[in-house]
Length: 353
Image 1 (cartoon, rainbow, N blue to C red):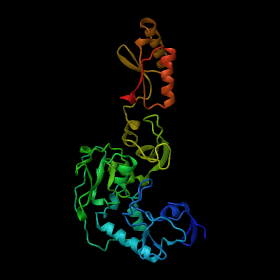
Image 2: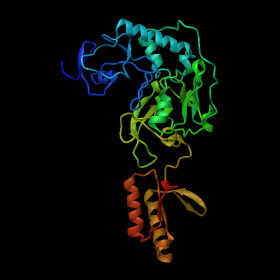
Image 3: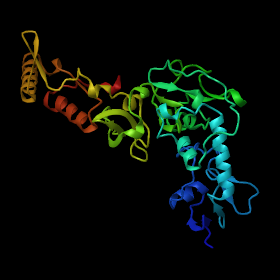
Image 4: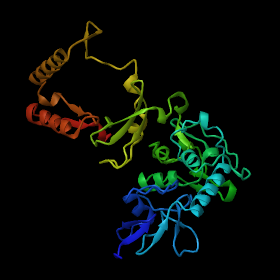
């Protein structure tokens, strides 16, 4: 047998040194379900959903943490594995309130719901064990529903390892464990910058946009990939669209340059698109009143005004501020316009402030 070869569900699989069983299986399209695993972060094995049967091992092993090894024979859906996953799902269902799937914003996009259906888990055999923490609704952009939190830790990993904000962590112990922010404060009073990476990482309905109940669920929308308009970085977004209206934005996974990340503006700042107050044509003021104009009329007016000001008062009488929403090439052209054509160094960029 090759030095880097193992067998998963009867299929011979080549693996790279350092790869886990989960990574080796993913490479050949074998689906091992996970809840706590977040790509690009250190695996924790916390959820125990990815348990697999390894020939010769005394117990089931977590596929996301155990390194692949030469000669391993792995079963990902044996009777023992399925029984373990069903029990784990039942325990998770008993550790929170998951009986309102029909009205949950995450319904249809909930990994726990998906796995419960996949493994035919109808209800929990175990008594409820969770601590009743009130829903946190005081934040401007994010609702935290602790009753749905399964303590998988994905939000903590997303905040700490992906966005490097380190605003949230596990707090308390045992049955009272919860995800806390800065000594168990509301997110608005903590170090949270509301990038929303925790929402994207959450596999259940514990973290949702504040306006989620007013809009269609993600599973009901069409997904369209585009580029974020807020700065010149070029972050890739997924627009969730229904009836030609954007209802939510998420980051495109495995896409350059942001690799699944977004800032607060990129994720939440899209209301302007459908605003009734949005300008759709240039306006020129005449006799104190704005009138609609064509782009040619507006640009000719600006050019003539700049020309006259420079003629009367010199080039340093004008200044420009380049917009961070434009691409880097446009900002470069603007500074060339001011320095090379207007002959002034009065040029700045709003990203600096």
